[in-house]
Amino acid sequence: MHPFFEDRPERFWTHLSTGLTFPLHLHLQLELFLVLDGQCDVTVRGQCRTLGPGDLAVIFPNQVHGYTALSPQNRAVLVLCDLSYTGGYGDTLLRCHPEDPFLPAEELHGNIPFAIGELEREQRQTEHSPAFAPLVQLVLARALPALRLERNLTSDRQELTYQISHYVGEHFREPLTLGTLAQELGLNRYHLSHLFSEKIGQSFPAYLARIRFSCACAALAETDRPITEIAEESGFESQRTFFRVFRQQLGVTPLQYRRAARAGREPPEKVF
Image (cartoon, rainbow, N blue to C red; front, side, top):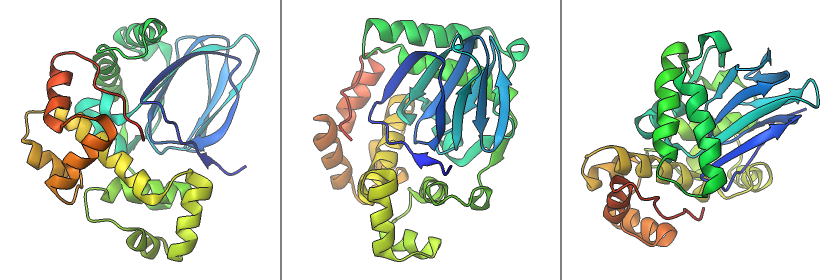
């Protein structure tokens, strides 16, 4: 079965799953899968591992993965989050992947199950919480040093959805058009446009804007870099476009977004 692109509208989502079985897919979010009880076969980038209680899978954005529960009693916490919650780790998550994305229970830092448990409990109480980003970044701070990271290569996967997501992830900071992407992938521009609608479920401009916007949100919340610099580094063609997108999507300016994030308030919900 070919993997499919899953367009997740949520910025942040947790789920206490029972007997999870889900086919191969990929998406823009970071995904964490912590087994609580039973066993589950987890496949990431062609590697399949049977995970048991306390084991963790760390799935970077745009990486093909799937689940097969080995018993109805299998229970796990699933966390998906937009890159804007990952702070300074966003660039690494887009450009790299773990050589081995699985961390056994005995190698897991105690902060990791604690933080994932808190994320699940926190979302049961409120849809938006200022605790989400710090807890996600705590997991990454403890998990990434235990993972050997490798640079993504287009040749890693021949699946077209992977090639698209990989190329855009590498070049979203540059002036990027559908025509440029089609030329790089050796496809007809109109055929590629149809593939975006059919396989990814949104237009190329919307897909590109979502990545740029997530990158900008993370930089605004986590750094003191000038807003003009962040706009340029995130791939926006002009400051005017940058401000217009924030107004359209959040109803606030980039500075207001930064102030809300720094004050510990949940910034407005994106509407991509």
